[in-house]
Length: 304
Image (cartoon, rainbow, N blue to C red; front, side):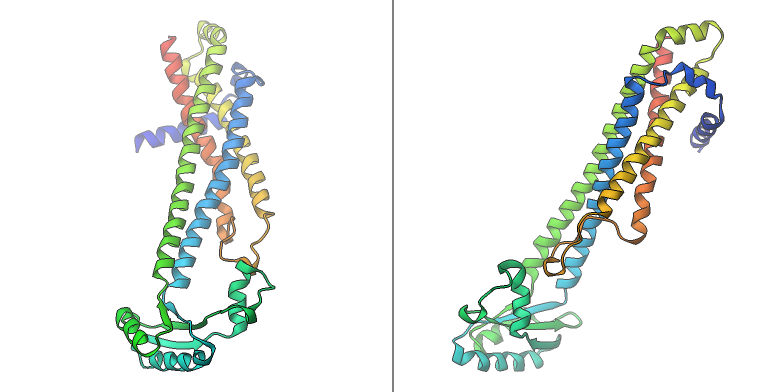
């Protein structure tokens, strides 16, 4: 707790301290420009990684919710037996515990399901399209094995699909993509810490003679460190802010997912999630503050 309070006091001193101390750090140069560019690039990438993380989470929830509690019976039979088997299956489903409702899907509904895969000109009349019965489950659902055996006995052309073989791989894939997004964010943060630390050390090394002169005239190491910390923190914040806003603008103008092909969730933010990228510049400034102070203290102690 005391360490956190000390860092908070240092942050306040840095923002309200002696701005003339900035002259210790050159106002331009590759180290200062590198800090701004690194913060800009990393913030830009972090926004997209965060969007991927959130979108894949929505995708997993959506697939899990929409496919859970539903199942389908597919009927493949000769034309003369299709209607009879469909009536038999509907009669079985109506008397099966755990099934709330069952209905035979129309040709138009089946066409809409197949359109994203085969296009709008699918010749339904010339293809042996099976009949589909949509089942809505209730409670714990039906006894799947028992229902399959009953369908096999009374309607040989009927096959029950409880969506388990589809739902689990899809949800697992979405969860792995979400893990990839989280891993990307972690790698970006780690790279930012390393690059800003190296930039701060380079700036300290480049100004070694200036630091020696400041020490000769009585400047303390804390005063010198503040100059570097202030400059790098402000530049990291500005770079992070520009990168975050630009990435948010790109994401905002991404094309929306068409409803006819909406089996994937669009990459982006929803509702209050648009506020999350605004914290990235603060995170970048915090990283710069901690990294630069650590680098400055280490460098100054070695050259004392």
